[in-house]
Amino acid sequence: MRTPVACTTVTILMFAGACSDPPSGSATYGPATSAPAPTGAAVSSAECNAGISTEALPVWAREGFNFDGSGVPHRLGDQGGLMAILFAPPKADPVDGTKILWVSRLPVETAAPLTVSGVRSDGLTATQELPNGAGPSAVKIPEPGCWDLTLTWSGHTDRMRLWFTG
View 1 (cartoon, rainbow, N blue to C red):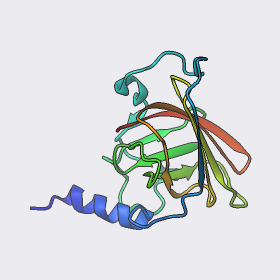
View 2: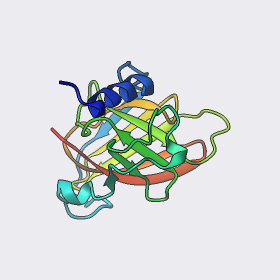
View 3: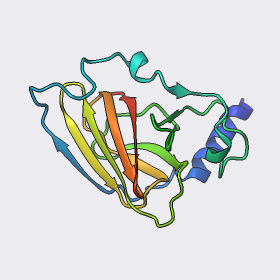
View 4: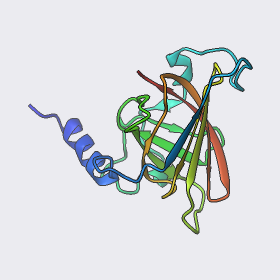
């Protein structure tokens, strides 16, 4: 038996483009270094995901949703400029990536790429340019763990941490 929540989630996935293959952009990976990453010591998945909410999406992030988004995991950037809407737990996958819908709270007059630069606590780095800017994407992270992401788009910058599973 299907529940209304399951059917609604499928509707969101289809509408948000998460079922299609958006352009993935270019991704580069760097080796772990002996110097500690800006995030310091390794953190647990619970600590890394502390900012993820399943409450209703803010009104500005609901475009394309046919309800308030309650139950859909999402994380607002530290500066409040960009939201990551997560349709499944982010998975480290350097080939296919993990689907994330990026929603900009800040005005975007001209579409510009969204650059996702990540560093894991051991210094491993990953950078990817998503050519279509905020919107549905396939973020390619090479290995599991807590990633401190710096996100730049249309003259804006925000940061957030996300745990990518194996």
